[in-house]
Image (cartoon, rainbow, N blue to C red):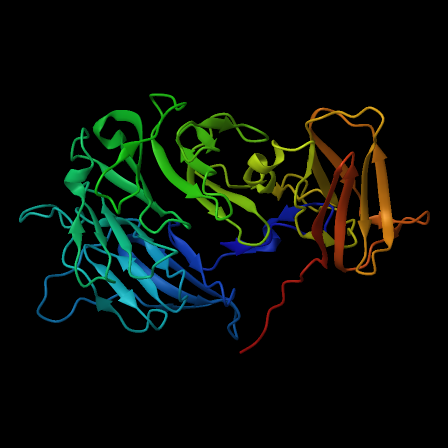
Length: 435
């Protein structure tokens, strides 16, 4: 499925705003960052397809599952095979079977860049011993990791020419383990996180490991996590390497010290939410949360990423998100019981931190245009801690809707004057083009 997360309808997000792009139980998917109309998705056991969302008759899928070369044993694929689009070149795709496949032309042709990386032995079930996790270093395209459903873990530092077995480097944990997720640090090329679970072996403990030397040594990072809480995924902030998010069977957790301690995130989230996937939007600084049976949630994480900056000064203005301006259409539902998703609240939440209360000085916040003309402003009594101001995107006594464009959000308080860029954009319309 694919669709919108914000609409201009008072009804919110409805099923008509989403479309099915591939039929199956629902597995991994990846969107080409340079072409949002090209999506990679799969069915069971490696049934990989490339989908063109704007075909002449709607979404059209081309099957691109790698074919086993003649004369070689059939390749094995997991029920939920990992898809990885290269951060360095979106035309390059990696796909996991029992070997790592690589394509440099969006899946039209494949090469095998690894030996069998699993612990497969003759007589094992044909669907067992498969790769379940792939990761590529954002700092070095030649550094790749592969983890398996039988606990095997490998790294290559030369783009697949040679692979180093890291399986025995994770000590104190039985080999009967499932490598669920691998996350490479976007700042340090040798730093990597691995999520392991063993609930298939009646072990419900959380296992998150970190290495700073390409997997030669590992540190367990579970302080603050319940002991009966299997883990599914981890995501590192691309703006602040100290900020990590962790998806577990019992909810979402955040760390602001690189995983040394975890705090549960509960705001507007069900208390026992199984979180199976996490993605950070590259522009909006939203954390997109994929759950088991409870749909998709979106949480703004910009203030969390900037939290450390906000604590060492009298006051701090957090960077605002790109804000959408539009006219809300009031529609009447023909089916009141139909599913509706919650829209992002209209307007902009302006967030600022006050650490030193100066009673004689109000917090002066204003928006100015490129000519430095103030278009709207607020003067607020300072209150200790994190503060939030809601703006409906209107300006002037006539309450005219602000024009689309680039502005500056300014805070003037005591000796602090801080400026953050502010973009106002119109709500994009989903258009269906013909080939």
